[in-house]
Amino acid sequence: MRVVAIDGPVGSGKSTVAKAVAERLDLPYMESGAMYRVAALAALRRGIDPEAEGAADALTELVAEVDMEVGDRVLLDGVDVTADLRSKQVGRAVSAVAAMPGVRSELVRRQREWAEEHGGGVIEGRDIGSVVFPDAELKVFLTASAGERARRRELDETADDLARRDLLDSTRAVSPLIVPQGAVVVDTTARPIDEVVDEIVAMLK
Ligand code: DC
View 1 (tube, rainbow, N blue to C red):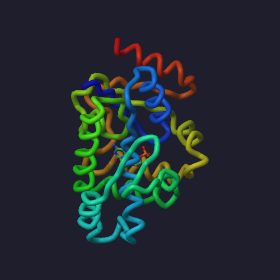
View 2 (cartoon, protein in one colour):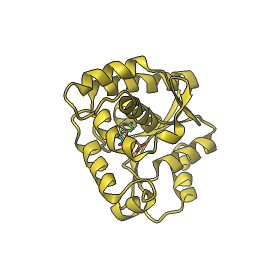
View 3 (cartoon, rainbow, N blue to C red):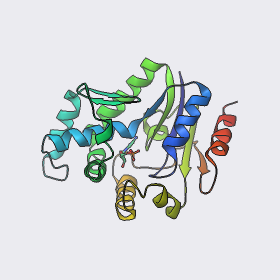
View 4 (spheres, helix red, strand yellow):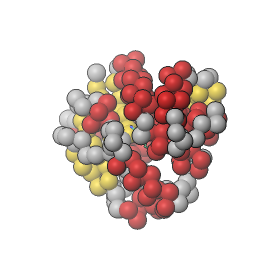
């Protein structure tokens, strides 16, 4: 099974680069963050405040019972929710949801299952090389300067929201965002996408 793991903080270029690498290698692409966003959306729709007491148990139960499909379109219980995943409410709730160990273990299980079913793929996230696929054929950790990351995301979230999410994602107790062991760190600041993609694809040959 051929797995390429691409991790990094918000705005590091993960999605754009991972999609292009997948296309070049003719491998399926998966955005694991979409699963965490679906979980956050499901919580908000059930009226569960992820920061409230007891929310972790309720959320762990909820993610185990919902049906989610992550691909070009993202489905929650068979309904296309792609357009709802980038809302400010989901953006604000998602880090708290992603910090819950019960939620993470279920979503990690689903990510591994996805890779089995697809015979591998290019998978992007925060813990793909460190936890989900520590034996991936290639692990890449993308970075970019704080200013550039904020600029890339400015239509979707404020610099404050981005900084808050980064802090929560990198300081949580379970599977925080770290540079995985054996990962190649690639700084995408002021670099054309094609050049970054070429560099990553060349590492596989
Ligand atoms: O990639 P993204 O910004 O859409 O991810 C949304 C959130 O999900 C992010 O703030 C942290 C969490 N996440 C995670 O904890 N682990 C992953 N593998 C992917 C995302």
